[in-house]
Length: 453
Ligand code: GDP
Ligand code: MG
Image (cartoon, rainbow, N blue to C red; front, side, top):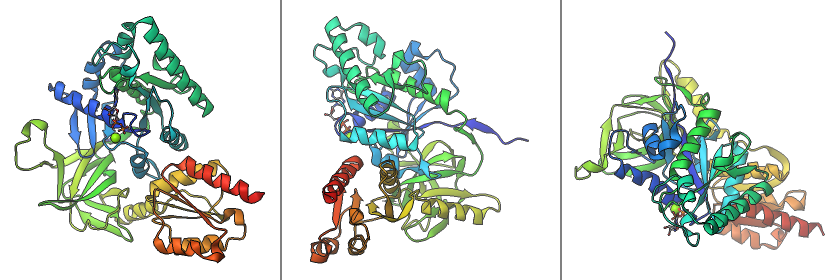
């Protein structure tokens, strides 16, 4: 008999500049669960929120006449591109789709651009949430309504203002090489990025953004979402946490197959591969049972896509971003090899001569290196962790002084590295530190141009 296959829930990350409304949008999506308490309501997972398709259909009303076979959407609860790059699956991004939140009144800011560049490099489909439309002067709030409904109730001046602001975004996106349109004017999702005007605060446009995501998944990724429902589980470790009464636990996003109590699993530690056995699987308790002493509910098994807490022995030292794989049947060696490979498989093309790059996680390092590659900047060495004295010495001895540089993304410079940098013999070396990739690259390029003169 053929193995049962199914379309799993697509995984969605929320990205964008600080204060543009990422957390508010996630809260809004989660909050709808409190309102819609009937069957099919939104459920809380570990590290994620699941919005089943019937909840989406109910929220979006008449918008939802399309025939859907995607079971819903799983939103990663930690917003930001850091979560996006940490969450890896098979060497790529774990998230199937993303929402880039932009404050419509402020327009693009550095982290907006960075998010777009990361998404382009990973070829991840996304939609733009043009947020805070309720702040447009004279806006009449229609709580929770689909965009076109509330738009029709605004006066001409307000409508004109919104159109202007949307076209400013279209212009900015075009400068970055993306074709985009307001979502209701897009007929080909493959060629145009949808811009959905929303308010995370009033919920206006939120039904539309959910429908656009479903549409994207439905049309362009159903085959890649097909998983074998009862196959061995595969996931990514989101966080490693000690829990009272449970010891060390892993918060895992499962993207393929099934994970069961008693399963033997393989995860990656800092310097070794760890094999262990699942002792318990835990989910958050539903809201209404909040008074019960135990914070978690035990489940026997879980199927992708889902967020789950895993308790097991020997979890000390597991790293965030590590793959998690289930051993089933006689494939132990193969699974161990897969995990080892995934963790080493930092997709950085190294050259004999180039800059040294550092970042705080594997995913961040990969995101940085992809962007450098796009700028034809060669990399000689790439590593996770803070900048060391050894990095400075190595940068100092490189033959081409235009590459005597260290680029440190989201990671500190150790004191003895700073001391070394102050040494007269290292006066030609520079370290570029920061939390926004393209600014780091701009700074490096500017430094290089000055050196050339
Ligand atoms: P984040 O940094 O991207 O997660 O942004 P937050 O969700 O924390 O939002 C930053 C601020 O903007 C908060 O004060 C929110 O209340 C406010 N905010 C977010 N979305 C909206 C919106 O749609 N309308 C209005 N008026 N304020 C919003
Ligand atoms: Mg936030």
